[in-house]
Structure formats: structure tokens, C-alpha cells
Image 1 (tube, rainbow, N blue to C red):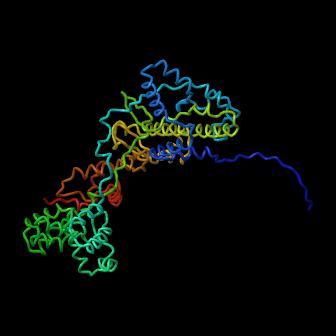
Image 2: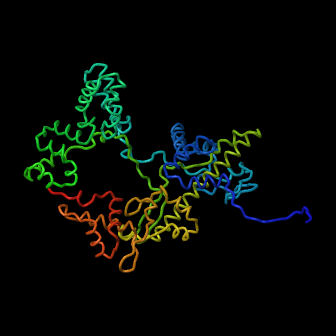
Image 3: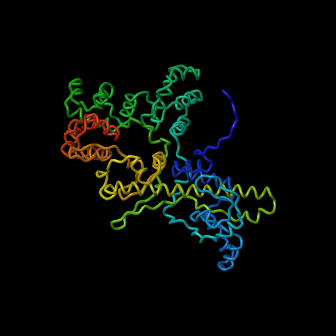
Length: 497
């Protein structure tokens, strides 16, 4: 067989993940707080970018220095600033060798003409809101003391010898967030500190008298006993129930306690009331977990019979491309290359943020179309919905919709929800219609909320009640939904008194 060399021309399509496309995808999946942090980092690294709000504040200060001469201030601003607001199209009117928005590279930019084509945006007010919305002075001071700090302060104020203080610090360092000393064993603390086990026991007993009451206990039983003694409720019945019947107390099986302790039911009830006032996790009031506040990415407002989807730009920097570097560039080739590179990077960032906002708005509008009854009537009217439905409606891929709906929130007339909330599997009803799983959970919660607390509904009873409303699901499904909502079983929900 002969061998020969020849040339062939073939056409093929290939997806190339350019840096700009990668940046757009990254921005799309960021949460709002992550986006704000990323934009601030970019503003520190790229001097071309600036916040329009900060620029407005500087302009207001200049007016104050000029004694309120508005005409002179405007002359100075117009002479020294040519800024491009984020809301305006980035490439409109620019003279470029090559500009491709679909992910290809951006060519060299005639940035002088580019900046000349835009006028300065109207200055924003330098005052952002009512002072009543600002945090109080106490909220700006410092972080609250931790449980370890609080216990360490009491230990140093107890007047113990230095050796016992060191033992106490070792014990306190091993107390968990709930206030329990469970690990390591006290004998290990004694070995590490070179002390006897008896001396360590004495120090632990001293710590157990500290605030909060019950701290330093090695078990729930010991924690309850410490609080009972401190409250002066250390009578025989309370102590016996704590020592022998905490499990029955949790299950509200009072008859078992009555049979074992041979006490009247009324007295067992009174003792149980006392024990239930104790805190099983005494250290939680010093928990350091800060609350996480949710800022919605979009608002859905109802005006008359119509709904409107509005982006929430509060808190996001109003990005502009600064004209300051126009005069600073000079004739240096290195300076021109630097400014060109930073300008190109700033363009892509602003464009990517604009694209992110447009995509979120598209998805929110599609969800509004599919879940219109929910926005009108509430969670009971939530319909089954999958990512593919929205993806086909707006002409995007499912993975894009998944990125958009993760960690993005919407403020609606029914409350604030994650966009993922509106995607639910369907539960078939006896009348042939499908119902969203979230709506079924809401119905279960409603039935439990209206039940007789002395005779709570079992899971099987909930199945029967749901069937009367046309919802036919298995008992194990009811139990699964109940556990997902953090609702206890009927035996633990039962209230005897």
C-alpha cells in the first residue's frame, strides 16, 4: 500500500472557555454577598473602576469647599471627569478594532474616543438614608464575650491558688458550646496538669457553681441536678425523676414514673413542670454564631392586578470607568498598554454584572409566570416545577438556571424565598391534579398547628386527614416531611398539663 502526503481543509465547531466567559459563569453562581466582596476586591486591584456613590460624595465635598458655587463646581467636574455609568452600554459608540460580546476577545480600544462619547452621570445624593436605620452605638463596639471568656473571668475572680487556676483553665478550655465538659476525661486533665484527680474534682465542682448555672456538667443528668440544687428544688421526687426517668420524661410517659416511684400523678406533674424549666444547654446564650441576614436579589411587586420584577441594586457598588487615567497615561507605551488592559478588564466586569442581573430577572419573570397563583394566594397554591420548565421557557440551559437559582433570593408579597424554593416535585391528588411537595408540607404543618395538644395527630392520622383533602400519600412520606420541617413525633408533642 502506497503512502502519500496531502492537505485537507475541515470545518468544525468547538466551545472555547475564554477568560471572559469563565468570569461571567463565576459571577452568575455567586451569592449577593459574595458578589459585593468580589467587586470590592476588583476595585482595589483595578484603578480604572470606581464607585459612583463615592464619586458623588467627593463632588459634594468639593461644592462645600467652593462655598456652594454650583457653576464653578460643575466647570471643574466637567473639565476633570469623563465617567461611564454601569447602566449604559459599554461598547456603544466606541471606536474599536474588534469587539465581541459573545465570549470572544476584545480588540484594542481607542479609549480616548471611548471616554469622549460619554458624559458624566448625574451626581447621586451623598446621604443614603434615615439615621434611624443605622445600628446603635452598642452594636458597633465589639464582639460579645464568649463562654470561655466569661468562665475564665469568673475563675480568676474566685480567689483560688495559682495551681487550681491552671487546672480550671484547662477544664474551661474543654467545655463545649452547649456548656458541657465531656471530653477528655478529668483524669487526663489531672495528668496534664500534674495534679491529683481529687483536686481536679474540687476545681470542677467550683466551676459548676459559675454562671450560667449548669455549666461544666458531664451529662444531661448532672446538668439538671446542678440546676435543681441551685433553684432549691432538690426534693426527693425531682431528684429521683432526674436520676432515673429522664427518658420517660422526654416521652411524657408519666404513668411509668408513677408506677416506679409510687407517687400520685399530680405530684409527678408538678415535679415535671419544675424540671422542664431548666435549661438543657446552659452555654447556648454565649453562642458566637452571628445571624445571617438575607438581602433579596430581586423584588416582585404587585400593582393592581399586575406583578413587576425589579432588581435590587441597594448595597452594590455603582461601578463606573474613571477618566482620571486619561491625563495620567502620557505618551509612554507601557502606560498605554497598562491602561488598555485595565480598561478591558473593567469593561468585561461591568458587562458580566449586567448580564448576571438580566439573567436573574429572566428567571424570576419565568417563575412568576409558572407560579402566578402562589404570588396571589399563598403557599397552598404552589405548583410542581422543575428546572427544565424554566430553562425551556427562557431559552437557556438547565445548568444556567441552576446557578441562577442557588443562593439567590426574591422578595414577594408572600415573603422572602430562595429561588430554589419554587422548584418542587409533584404529588398526585385524587382529583387528577398535581400538588407541589412544599404545599403538602404546608398542609401538614397546618394540621399539626390546629391539633389538640393533649391528643396530637399520629402520622397515620395525618395520612387520613390529608386523604380527605384529596392528598393521597404514604405514612412514611408524612414522617419524612415532618422530620424535614423539624416537627417532633406525636408522643413528644403531647402535652399533659
